[in-house]
Every structure is written in C-alpha cells, then in structure tokens.
Length: 201
Image 1 (cartoon, helix red, strand yellow):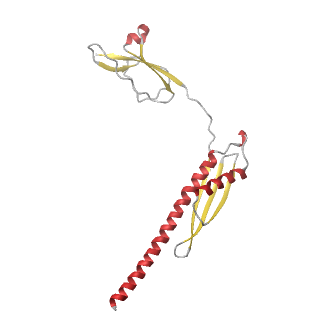
Image 2: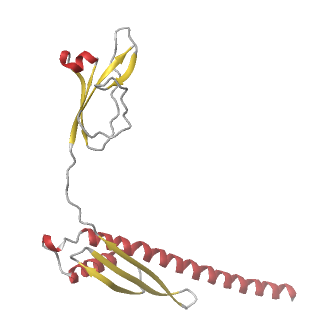
C-alpha cells in the first residue's frame, strides 16, 4: 500500500515538474522568437525606406511593409499585437513593440514582448582616394634608372602587404626602404603615393 502511494505521489510530482518545464520552456521560446523576429523585420523595412528628400514613402506604407515581413516570419496561432511608438520616414526612425499572447500547456496565458527602435543613417556615397605604391629592385631603379618591380593601387587608409622579395644575384635582401632610406613600415595606412626600393647587404 505504501509503495502504491509513493508511486502515485511520484507520478503527480513528475507531471507537475513536466508542466513547469514546458511552461517555462515555451515562454522562453516565444520570447526569443519575438526578440529575434521583430528586429529582423524592422531592419529590413528601414533598409528599404527611402529618405523623404529622395522621394520618400508614407508612414502607412512603411508600417504595412513591416507588418507583412512580420507576418511572413512569425509561425504562431496566437494573438499578436504590434504597437508603433514612432515612425518618422523623413528621419529614418522606426520604433515598435511586438506583443504575443499565447496559452501555456497548463492552460495559463503567457505573453512575450520585444521592443525595438531603429534609426537609419543617411550615408553619402563617398569614394575614397586611391594611391599608387611602387616597388623597385634597387635605389637606382627608384631614381629613374631602372624598371619598376611591382605597382599597387591602394585605397586611402588601407595597409599594404609588401610583395615577395625580389631575387638578388648573390646578395642578401635587407628589406624595403623609402626615399629617405628609412625601413618601410607596412603597418601604417597608405595616405599618399609611395615608392620603395629593395635594400641589399
């Protein structure tokens, strides 16, 4: 009799623990889904949002596009409420709250919420300056008495890896040097046209 009572109590405890785990797990899954889907849909919407001076779109169209993206991504039969806090097409600002109400396996109601504000920056399409970097086999070549070993075009602010050392006839390569006979520092970004020559020992 004692064993039967213990088995029944253990079974009831097991069902309770299982119900609690399912409730907590379901709530966490819903919250994670809401926190992932809302930012994704909003970012896609804001990326496609033209600025007002470029012909812009109305706020209602922006919201409709975001709702369409959310509807495509949310896989639920629960009630979903979308609140718009701010929608400024001219400034590229979109602020929303997504709230999902659902039923836990134990019959209790649960909610999952996500709030997100996205500001789209207007960036001008500025192309960076490009510089020429030439490498010569020796100093005389750099002074105009020989041909260039390698030539690179480098975007401003980028660093350049030096080319493979040129082969020397019985001499040892001692690194690349600049016009002032200083050893080249290739860790510094390129900000002007540069010439280097191979130094030999």
